[in-house]
Image (cartoon, rainbow, N blue to C red; front, side, top):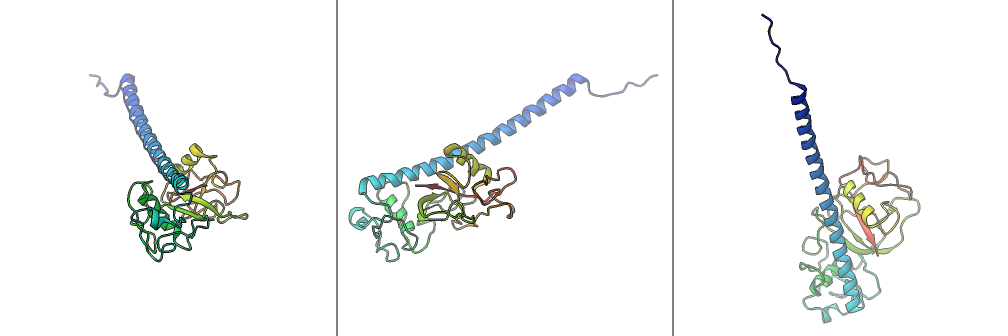
Length: 237
């Protein structure tokens, strides 16, 4: 007697392939939704702090951290001797790290009611003095050059900037840049930053591996395909 050979029919194979395709599509779509949510969260965090910064400037006609009458006009601002001039800024129009005004800025903003949380200035940044980004690393609001071409041939000029802090995957930071600026790490109003924020400072340029950017030059791009999971950016004011 002839023995019948068991196997899958073409219809059964087609059904299996369709199911696998649907599962893969669901996984990819889910990953896309997670990435979009992270991008929106970072943008929302940056926008909220920028709104607080400009709101403070509009109300007090001074910058947070640099305000000379903060202890007089803002209830609860601490008179810490290592923070500005015992809780007040020097009024020179710059939020300087040298006088810890970059830490004092969060004290001024939170005590004036422009942002959630309560931060108290101290001699060093910590979770009690400075807000964290969604990845648990500190942000920074300061007047300095730690953004853009920090290792490049042209360098960066001193400007007020809001740093996202590091530990952000490069594909996320690149998408943030594309949504709010020009999508390039060394030009525009949102640029690359090597600020460590209490973690490990990001790396940039083709010589580093893995790196956040393809090159340390104006022609550099975010290394979004094979880049680092430890990147950061800065919104320029």
